[in-house]
Length: 181
Image (cartoon, rainbow, N blue to C red; front, side):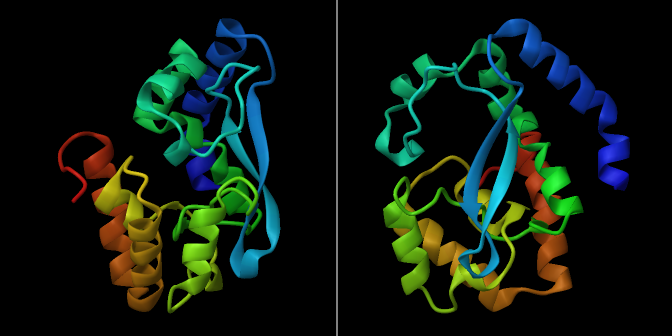
């Protein structure tokens, strides 16, 4: 709740700019597998044009992604502002601050889902997170096997101190003070 209150000016500005700079809804909503693969409705600010196809990032070139993203959406993605509505997912208990990032459902991102299911321990044993170990290690890299490895490694090493380290490092990577990897 505190995060929502403190970031409410950013949430309000992002809502207004998203609505004023492109047609369509302000929010992108999509079912994603949560803890134990139970589906939940993930919220994000819409960064893509309304006619953009739902294709997993690893199946698209950087150029394709760029053409499908709005100008404001590009900025939101670069700064991760598009992820802020997930604070509401955290508030209602569907997500946590730190954990494996929620993948698309199996028909959209089948390789990642299958790689996670095969990993030991399975990343689906915990709630998905706003940030995670794979994000700070890989940032925008989309190698599914490596992502599943880091997600599994997070579950294996999960603790308050490891979460705190990932939380702090997420901000350092986001603001350019550290690089993933």
